[in-house]
Image (cartoon, rainbow, N blue to C red; front, side, top):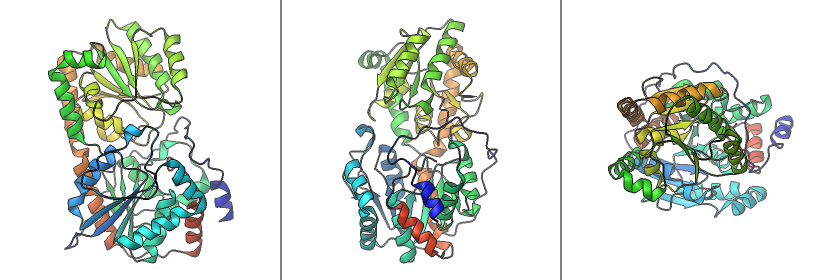
Length: 447
């Protein structure tokens, strides 16, 4: 235990996590066949723990509420790198905010107050099932201990996949211990189920649908923008023809590689397209330098971070969407673009790739380290006929239709039922010690 904790203590609290290029993992097999879930005669009560309530979360929990006797969301930090990411209207979701902002949350992590506050709120709610996000957030491990002390069951939500980044033996041991004392899991797709079963979760208790967005918000908003395309282009300052990307400006998003590929594509193809990139972040200076070095300043628009309500118009007026991360647990912007009816260019490491991209039907899969491969895909979509692009966009909508909030709701209920039907798991003294130690450190689950 001391050896494991010494390794974990080297994690950098709250720092951005930068990933090396992913290594082949060989777990792109078909997802495990879900076991038969015997639904209980009554709807159980659950408490969902999350770092914040984003627009994505709000849509998922609204869709899920009807499936439970009581669904309460415990929002721990209530902060994000971009405040626009947070939902200002969670509707009728029952929510408890544990701490107000990153500073208060981190102070509570150091003092141990996250552990005690989480347990105090759960004592009041008395849920039959606690649902945690990831394996090591302080509020998650506190909830795990509370559940074992109060005969409740635990569902772990996870979008980690094997190829997120390099794996370290000691951290994998600690992660496996925590996975094994949970009762069921809700994950993104087949790669994620392969990883969590390797860590020790029985395959029959793993369900899909974690990564969902409000498809209708993006579909309807994109269509409205297309109806008044000229007006919206003028309002948003957009070019007549463009490809769209949206990401934080950090190295793993590979935006500099995208710019290089775009420059190569437009040099080889006689097309009028621009590249519009939404987002912001620490890598903005490096990205601006890459645009200048490629000589495409007149073709690349860095449009900044956009709020939730304005995003659908940017999708609706684009010819295609591009997301070529070097490593990506899922990539919810891919869901957004698919719901908006766009052809997709997505890199193989993205967790959403096997679920949302059918190569040749609704887009292309590319190697993110291969500039030529990306350039060929970009050129193919920029030179495609409008009819071909529209057909691919329609296929994107058809595929993503099964990955909306309703699927999250089904998966969460199935996971809760599987957890309730599973036997009690013993919490060993060394497991409790590990949970207590983790409750005093913030360790990113993107690993």
